[in-house]
Length: 175
Image (cartoon, rainbow, N blue to C red; front, side, top):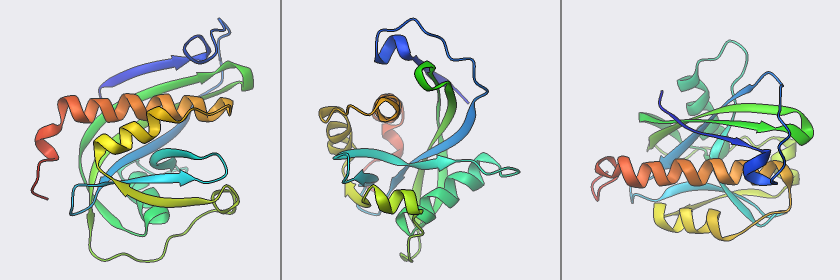
């Protein structure tokens, strides 16, 4: 998979500190509906939007994890269309590293129940559907003081710009 970026404390806080932690593996999905809107997780507690996604479980492959996370968070099964790329995050302040793999997907079938975690419920997570351009604007325009979410926000901006720039042919007017 194409490597899109490496984000470190230098990019987020200006610090030269380096993270040496073993990276957690995560997946994120730019999930399109039949109207070419994408699913965004909205965290009411932080007034922040992110792309759908989460950690890969032990023994789980990336595609299975991407589909599982989309189903849990949105209630929709999905079909993975293509890879977008990966982003490495090195959060030195908390000695946490993550390699996030991004995919483009489309919903398949009817909506079912979401399966949010207690943490997601506690931060008032809900799903909103917006055009990719509006989604990029929502993610870009609202800043956060939360250290970890600053990294997530930057990763999502990079991935959505990649979709708009290099995958526009996949997100035309026809589902």
